Length: 98
Image (cartoon, rainbow, N blue to C red; front, top):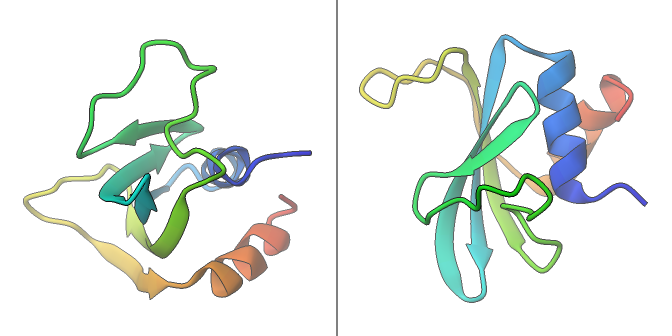
């Protein structure tokens, strides 16, 4: 079974011009994860050096996802779509075959 994180990473491989910013709750704490070209990195916590350690664990609660134009510049974000809920994101994932 493919994890949520893997599906989001695969989406960014198929859409290399996009960055996903995932607003999530992990172990009761807020986190924001950037996903770009198949890689995930937390913008709030330290990210493990081991790529097998998921940045977005299955226990995470996804609050919203933003789609932005790549490359991501926090000082000047270029949004494609903001505050996507998980149900809407699943439709985007399905549209690209992930």
